[in-house]
Length: 114
Length: 113
Image (cartoon, rainbow over all chains, first blue to last red):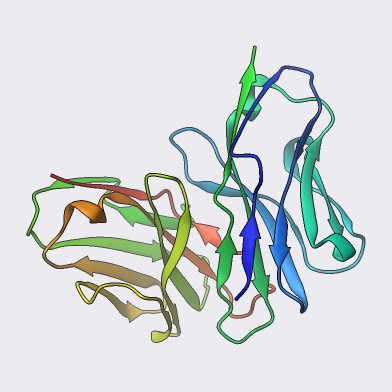
């Protein structure tokens, strides 16, 4: 069965630092990949998604992610973080199977120090 | 102009009670979902409906029963609530097909005492 791993459970950075959150998935077939963000007290929002094409995907708020098929990875990056980026970040994957189930990672809590 | 809405936002109840959480979407989507986010923030799919037909039913206790009166609504009814049911429940919707992005509701925080 497919799974999603987020290796960093809790990340603390200072403002203006660069960010990279790791995400790996286990599935041998075609996948669609997502990063969701949950700001404190709010619901999940889509940051970016990859379906096909250019493996470097740009999302909202200056985030980007790179799909590396050979490494089964979809890491999230941002060159310079802001205090407002403090949130929980979830990587997710869907396959082309009929049941269309989305699988989420366990999340990475990002805390930005002002 | 809310896309996916859930009510109530917070629900505090005693063990053994029966409660319902309602979800509505105005996006014209044909597929709706219920997710459970436990205290460790791990999200897990519970149910999925497409055009009022159940298509995903994960290993969830029988006490949980989804009801879809029409494509725009997917309600979650929980019987005999237990302490372990405390969590945030998210509703989501999308068009059919894994290529389509899911849009999430604001979540319902359930606390069972």
